Image (cartoon, rainbow, N blue to C red; front, side, top):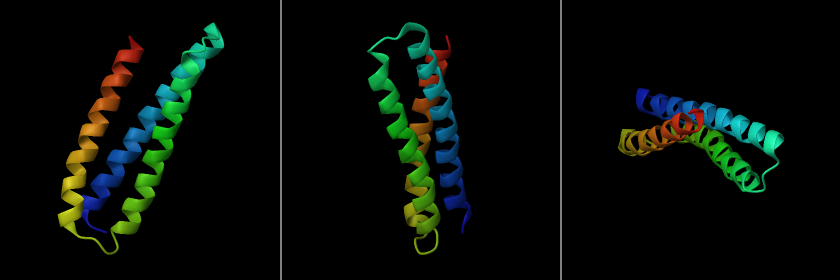
Length: 94
């Protein structure tokens, strides 16, 4: 497994950590307020969390047969996704 695939896996795992924290915030909000608006956000966050975990698994699998020509563009795409989730996390934390 090359450094590019390891980087991709680390990015999506960091994404998954932020999504887990965001999901925890949403669950806390729904417990305190019982708002119906938050329930779809919990489902939405959960789906993104599952997607991040599956991405880490698939990237590990791809690393055995796909080279850097696939891994490098995925680093760019995953980095943008990570930045967006970090921004969402910072927004929710305020």
